[in-house]
Image (tube, rainbow, N blue to C red; front, side):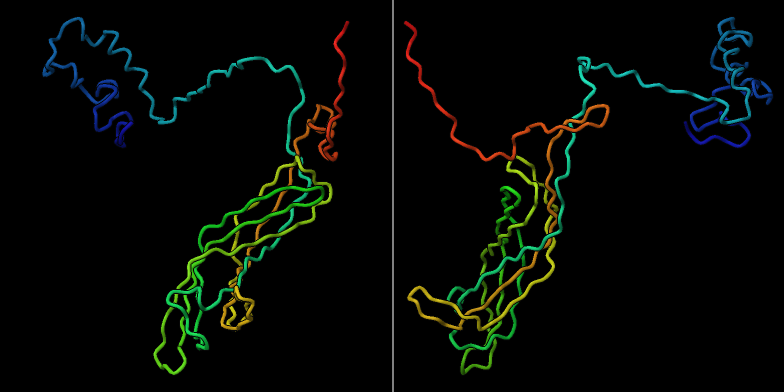
Length: 264
């Protein structure tokens, strides 16, 4: 409520909540003879306005103790059960995934001359796209990670290094064992962390015509994440647990179809 002075705890830059006379400091500067108000009964020293300031006669700044109470929340409809729905953890594992591919020299721009000496390879990673599905006792994860590959090379017979660039995506897939997992469970994966990037020149590559060439570069990106499988269950007040779907792990079958003639 402002900066209070040491002499008058209720004196701020906006004025005083109480008059000087209320603090025993002399005449009331607000309602005295030099006030812009006429000295009548409405602003008399014994008026209610003046008396209301006598509550300020406290030298303890913390004398006022206020207890605030938020209004009680009213439910739109009363609960009709003392059970709760929670997510039970089937399992949680830290796993690694590897995204890799082999790229021939002809995939780069400009094309790397066959037989060139590869001086350096740098890889800049980008967006990671993943898709996850659950099989019985297994979590299958596939995806792509976008990369920009920069290769510095020296062509045969040349002494001047050149740079070639390729922007593409690396595929990855992983099958993680999760005993007890069922197709209707839910999967939570933490954000991917890139643990390492590995490149190797001279990796064999099979061309479209079936020719094997070593004029290619292998790019590998190692990823890490944590997979958590959860299942919705109902818990009663005694701690009893039951599955929301007690047949979630049953293998789906084609339902039996029965045909009945019309009633006579």
